[in-house]
Image (cartoon, rainbow, N blue to C red; front, side):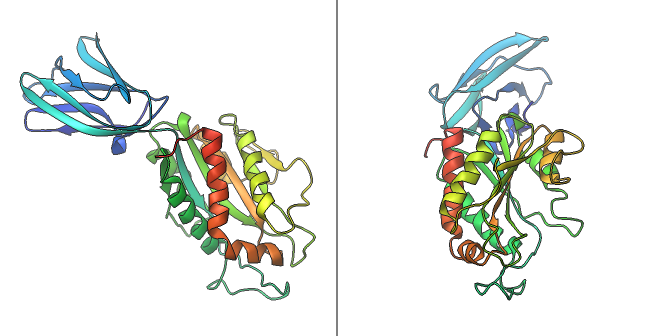
Length: 301
């Protein structure tokens, strides 16, 4: 059931309009029209672009309803007419929606000498992943996909409140992805530990997406990867995760029926990879964006 709203004029109202006037292919919405002087639904005539949506009128539960089904991506005006009165709204049909959650902890990046560290006000994981996330949103805005980039911060922990924000923003979690962007640590200034790791939960068949993201990022990182195979870790189920502790950005979205992937983009305490992450945010974002567009088969606007 997608989140909906009611719109009004002085004469008519429509309930069941998708929140944000956006709906994804695969979702449906039920529209009802009422005269404002009456609580009864009326048998309105609908006008719309039939190449983008289809509206099928039904009479059930003693009321008139119209089932709205998105067919292809695009924008259409939907107008209901009854007894010479009209009410309308614009509707955008997208393919999937993506909630982007950049890291929220200020772990410093190492300098190229491999011995000293940037101050947190210079370069840290939160700052850099937020830059990558902004580039990623700009890239995805060129495609028929609904994107939300969080600016939700909290002193309670790195992710608290974000899965709830994603749940409240998404109108259909079956067509949605929660994407967490991080960089890793553990190299300790060494070049011997390098590469990316992807984590995923059990909502949807997204293990191939996590693997594709890891492989794409590793292909552009200096030194590539020496991570042990398989490159995908963190096969989670509801409750206690089976690997690497309790990653809330996977576990909590799963509780809300949201598919979630967390990618650790290289090591920010590996000197060469830290330098790359600082200097190539747009390239990293476009690499991730290309994988998402291809995986979900999202058309260009």
